Amino acid sequence: MSDPIFPPAHPFDFDAVRDPDDGDKLKEECGIFGVVGVTDAANFVALGLHALQHRGQEAGGIVSHHPDHGFNSARRFGYVRDNFTRASLMETLPGQLAIGHVRYSTAGSKGQTQIRDVQPFFGEFSMGGAAIAHNGNITNAEALRRELIERGSIFQSSSDSECIIHLMARSLQRDIPARMEDALRRVEGAFSVVAMTRTKLIGVRDPLGVRPLVLGKVGDGWCLSSETCALDIIGAEFVREIEPGEMVVITAEKGVESSRPFRPAKPRFCIFEHVYFSRPDSIIGGRSVYETRRQIGVELAREAPVDADLVCPVPDSGTPAAIGFAHESGIPYGMGIVRNQYMGRTFIEPTEQIRNMGVRLKLNVNRALIKGKRVILVDDSVVRGTTSRKIKEMILDAGAAEVHFRIASPPTAWPCFYGVDTPQREKLLAATMSEDEMCAHLGVDSLKFISLDGLYRAVGEAEGRDTKCPQYCDACFSGEYPVEPADMIEKGFQMKAAE
Ligand code: SF4
Image (cartoon, rainbow, N blue to C red; front, side, top):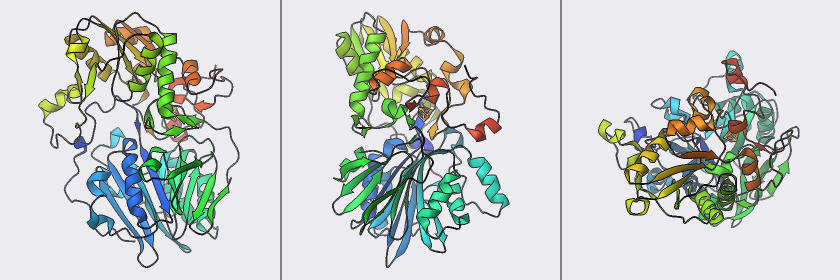
């Protein structure tokens, strides 16, 4: 396999793509996409990854296979649109089978991300090559890595996901899908995987189905994607979600063959995908993400009403919930905060002075609308609270009479270990403060979060959360982890005491 056009030698400027308030939002770490049975599959993958860019902005990679040219790959830092639209690059990725990955590395690794950490990863086995792209987080990766290194594996990257390739190499199974099954049975945590051999596109979801993966049909071919919004961009038809614990092996000739290689478990899909990570134009579990978010706003207005003159979203992810809140409360909706859509690449080399402007670089207050009003601000979450404080100051500077925060998720009091970048527990505002203390800390007139039950109702669970057997993963709110985070416990992480 070759990477015929090498990435730029100069260091990548992460600040150019990082949010200036990085660390105050939970960040999805990956998006994955794969296609089989279409001409120039890599072009379809590039478009799919472009639609999944919200799931990872730091780097992307594509691997393709052509019977005459073998496997080819390209991995780049930065946005898909800046790299994988260049004909000179795409011509190096021929074939009817391709997979790709977009990545957001964890905040702690800033400046350390290397091109070798960018997926898809590739392995050459006796029965042929295979590439894999992984969304999620392996909670026993460090233990696996230690074991594999002791037994002779030589890792090329610092990524957890590379364990899967090494576990496959150690399997004695005779074909690649069977080796993947073997490997993934050793892996704990959350994984949605898109993989390819010379002829097969493979998709797998972990037994709990924590991270999403959907199947689409495009012309005579098939595709796999983290979200349905990426099917729309290539004109693919949504077929179904890959079920938790399901593996699909797809070939141009035989179509989709499904199997269940793992012990059955009760699904625990990530509830935060509904709140924030997924795009609002995606469909999850048969529900429109936009509609679910709007319904969260409705529930929030019922649970935490307040007298006010204006409901404003914190754009963009707070918008559907604000629309729902305004509709339910009867309080007028207005765009009191306007996002500068071109933030990000604007300041290629941001100066200290520009960085200190922080949130003002990306959000501006609509003064004419705000002045003299009692304003309800609807946001998707509060993580460290630093952005919320700045937004409150901007709103008051613009002459608002009162500021009330309504948050479309319960307090985020626990870190995620399943593929979402979260600050350490001590840095989470809700881990150390009660709701009243957070309200005082933010300096707002009132602060209310949707309850966990209210969130469950909004995602379609009419009876709310089943406390004995929760229907979703909600560990970042509840502290109840569906898979024990073994590596973190070894490092001293304290799980919540059983009640
Ligand atoms: S801990 Fe939170 S963000 Fe992580 S998978 Fe569970 S619900 Fe999603």
